[in-house]
Image (cartoon, rainbow, N blue to C red):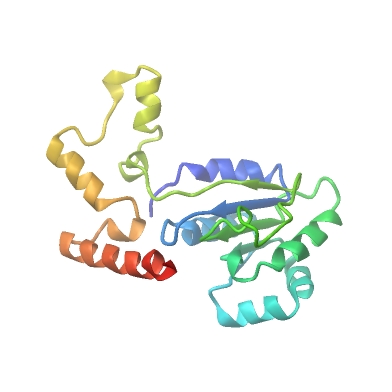
Amino acid sequence: MFERHIYARLLESLNAFRVVYIPGARQAGKSTLVRQIAKQRGLHYVTLDDSGARLAAETDPEGFVAEFLEGGLALDEIQYVPNLVFAIKQASDLLPPNEKGKFLLTGSSDLFAGKQVSDRLPGHMETLTLYPLSQSELSDRSRNTLDQIVEGEFSSVSGPTTRGALCQAILAGGYPETQSMSPRARISWYRSYIDARILKDF
């Protein structure tokens, strides 16, 4: 398991906001990260990839949210049931001012960026996008290369240093699941990903 640099920022945000939303591409590592945080903070973890949970949320959004309100809810793939946003806002409005970190949400599409949801939960929510693994996360470094270069720390910059190594890093990409694959398996994975996640929308 890779240590994600956004982890500490997420914990900080959960202490400051009632709702924290993590949009990001499929397979970028959102579910793994949210399960980690849910376990640490004692939140109920529910994924709407599960058809039973999705049906319950669609049938009675307010009741679904209320069921998990006491311990807090880590809800994966909220874009499947957009109406949950209004139930979450309603529950959030009724919380005492000192109650933070009640809802940790993820979505493979940014539900709040489009017209699907008109209420952006102003004042209730912080959005932190999770991207695929960076080179510093892959090599278990605490600082990323770009920050080091911008701050003039050229002597301590690490990462791919030859053209061949840089090409390999680019071809491997940053998706966690592909990191241990052979080149042939990785090509098949990316073809499948493109077919399922990109071309199907056109």
